[in-house]
Length: 524
Image (cartoon, rainbow, N blue to C red; front, side, top):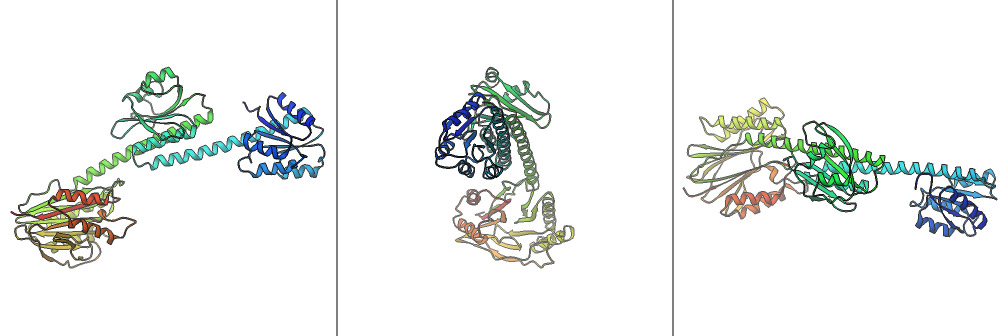
């Protein structure tokens, strides 16, 4: 059915008049349904949803104006145009009332066939244009929602799933997506309308084959059609049974493109092709962003790890286990650090957290580590070292703060010194588990005299130092999380490495970086 023809409901209690109007409509190529009364007309409108209603003003049960009002009051039928026809209510005030109460046109008898046909055609054209505009607005809104969901996808596979499902929903057709993951593997996802997307097997050079017949090696966007035979040759493991309309997008030359396509039992119209093109471009940008994020994340991890100790010194009488876990969703470098220094018969353990996530935070962290190392070259004094770190931060990086905890231990005797600048106190585990007392003010705030707490660690005792990234949750009090860590430490067990893994797993994926050092006195 084209824009010139429609399904029209004709409502009038006079058979001759109803037959005349219906015959004019059928002569113009329209499909016609006839009813006699208003209640019957409302029932037909609710089930048939005609393109147009032509109704006499006078019907035996409801007047035509009331029928019109009910049609327009129902959200499901309000967009159906109504033409009222009258042989009695023919005054200007009658016509005004009909139009004011919902009619889209009001004709008075006698009516000429040409006038009637032109009115029907004009009304249909207006409403179809309005419906197209509303449909396009709805599709553009859905396109925006799909694009937003793609950009919010937590991983690459979810991104492709959202794209395939969104395309299928947007165009009402079987869709498929092909894209290369950040690690260089080609993935394909497909989705039918109303179903979840599923991964499909794909040959590694499928995108190259598609590029050869469309976009080549250049950057840009190409919308193209592929017949069934060509598609079967290019994608031999596909389940497509009809032509395919697709779009290949490459944002920059040298990068792998992305493909987004749908099975087309009937050709896509211009509006649908435009939506396919826009969604394909949005997918390409989202894939590029995912690649860039992965690259930046890898660079950040590499930089972060380069600033941390490459190995932990082996010390008789002391077992040390360390963990560093970057935040799962943070591209920037963090300021968490740890250090384990062998100083003759003793070992100095440091754990700290510089404020913020940025390259500046990482460089400040590196400076503090280097300053700490320099401070113990000649004299080993944890309080003096902490004061030096505070001076470095205040002089060279005003406005920055950091928390640091130092533990100096003699493995042979268990004699230990603890100096804490605003950090979470060490967790001491042996017979039970308890936090050491809080320390002094954090670094970078003011001049401070740092207290040295002397403790004796018995053989078999375990000390845990960790940054707040391990335990901080937005929906939980810090004290609750500290208690969870303490309870875990009560069951530290003999396997220190396994305990560290269990402790991190207890709190799950973190929004902040995590640094953890666990040490235990063992027999010499």
